[in-house]
Structure formats: C-alpha cells, structure tokens
Length: 441
Image (tube, rainbow, N blue to C red; front, side, top):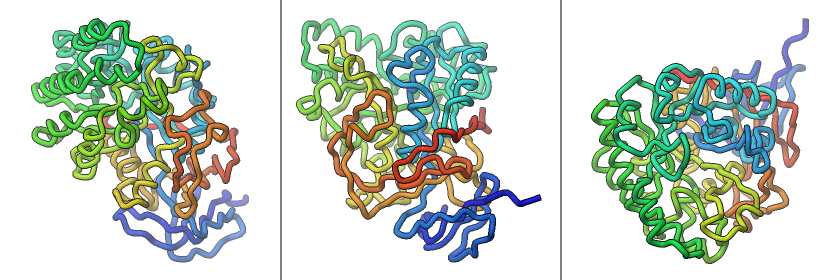
C-alpha cells in the first residue's frame, strides 16, 4: 500500500511561533505540519512547492464575516465568499447570524453547517444569534463559536438593545458573548435629528462615537457583573479603546477592522456610500488611537466584518444605501503593507490575524506554524506590490473600498488542511474546508 502523498514546501522564510524567522523547509502529512527544518530531503511521495523568495505564515482566521447564505445569495454565498477567502489567505472564518432565516436555533445552525460542508473551500464556524426569546438555544446550540448580540444597528428579532433583555443572556451560561456595541436608542433619536440629509458622511454623525461608547460601557458592566466572557466586535472609537485601557478584565477581548485602522471620514468624499459601514468610519484621530491600542495589546486581534452588498444597492441615495463592505481578500495584504512601512511587524500581523483569534475562540491546532498543528498556511510575496483591482476580486459583490491601493504581501499559495486551494491566481474549487471545533464552547 503506497504512503499518503505529502506536501514539501522548500526554501520559505517561515514564521515560527516565537516570532523568529527560519529560512527552511516544511513537510505536511495527512493535513498537519509534520516537520520543520533548515533542509528536508524530498521523498518519492512529496509534492514539492518551491517557495524561494516567499514568506510562510499561518493561515488567517477571520473572526467576523457576513457571507449572506441563506437568503441573501445575490450579494454573496458560501462558495464565492470562500473563494475570496482562499485568494486572501483566509483559511478559516467565523460567520454571523443575520442571514434569512436568522441563525438562532440548532436547526438553522445545522443548515449552515451542511451548506458549508458542501460549498466552502476553507474552514468554517458560525455564531448563534441572540434574540429576546431564544435563551435556551443560546445555551445548547452546537458547535457555535459564540453568541452574537446586536445591541444596535440592527432590526427585527436580532436587535437586543435594552438592559433588561441583555441581562438574562449575560447571567446564564458561560459561552463567549460577542457584541455589536452601538446604542440603538441614541441612533434612533439622531436619525430623526438628521432626517432629510442624503450626504453619506452624515452616517458617522448619526451613529456617533457616543453611541458606540454607551453600548460598550453597558456590555462591560454586564460582563463584569457576571464575570462573563465578552468580546467586543469591530471597535471603532478611541474613546472605547481608552475605556478598555483603563478597565479591561482578563476575560474581555476586542477586535478592530482594517477599515477602522486605515480609512476614516475623509473616505466619504472619495468613494461615497462605498465608505458606509456599521459602526461607521471615524475621524483620522481615531485611527491613531486605535493603532496605538492594537500595538499595546488593548485590542487583541483583527477581523474584516466582510459585509458585501451589490454595487446597485450601494448606489442608492443615503440613507437608503446599505451599510457594509467586503474585506476578506484585502485584509492580509493591507496589514502586511503596514508592516513593510514600519507600523508593526510581520509577527504582530500573524498574531493579530491568526494566533490571537485561535486563542480567544478556543480553536485547537490553528494559528501557528508548529509540528502537530493543522496545515492551514499561506505563502505571501513581500517583495512585489500590486494594486487592488476590481476585475480580480472573487467576492460576488465585485468591489472593494481599497480599490487602487498598491499593496504587498499578496498570497501566492494558500493551503487548507494540507490541500492547495489557491496557487498564483488559480483557485482549486474542489477543495473543501472543515467545521471548526471550539474548546471553550
């Protein structure tokens, strides 16, 4: 009986878990990293990948995406989104519950898992969405990476904005709670105040910094009262970052998007409603404070909040234009470009986009390049700059807020579970990822 073919990556610059770089080789066997050494002699069963001039990083785990299936597949679906992930070096994702139907029961969670098993080129996990009525489901639905609460910027059953509705969720169980922290009551009032304005820049004033701070304070209060594991999604304001700097219990984590680090309110004048997202873009001063918080460890990791809409939908006049933008294809090169510019290190980028995410969500054997870990890897080219081009995007929505940006660190080869899923512009659409496991859930 012949042995299982293995992959041998030769002459890569390999990022090790301690942040050091090793020029060497890596062998993958049966979907896992089997060996790392300065030189490994190929065998007859090795498929050899020449990685000369490339840097090997852990595959990206994107912990906040909206892939729109089921019910909104005209914007995106699990197949097209996972193709975009493969091109962007994202080997695992955690997807949000605001699909149609909402992911609020074991049955709707099972449906998503079955769809992903059939369609997703990369590994997948799903949140269970909180409503004011589904507490039993929040305790038992599995496998779920956590409970998602929309404290604001939502409507219908997923909006859980009042403290009296939130408290039982925080008080019961131990599963991670991830919050979209915006004060819905304040947003509703400010919408009335600014009614009749069609300039999309007003979006950042309607859903202002105070709305974000109010909700983050409330979530923190409830988390501390019950010592409940809390994750604050897409932190967007310096005020929230400074609040956490002063008062961040050990069981609380926070994330930031590349958009809130690299774009600001000046983007409305350039790209209009394409700059519209929730929570909104903020002032350049907020960019600086968020960067500092990320570098200091106040913010733990990075997520894209990939939330695609069609160009036709985005072309509607504000406030009828939807909020959200795609991001899985550009997040890694965006951050590696920042590293090349000296704002951070490559090791920090890998920690923020892989290791820290795996740790926070209790995902075993992911997020590092070490023997015994799953072979979810990305080879990137840090020597070549290429622009973000609309015609190259794999996301179904077909646009990016970063169009025209000249970036380095684009993935050359993406590997999921030991299988090459993307290689120099070619996507291997027959590859399938696996359902993620969550130790803490």
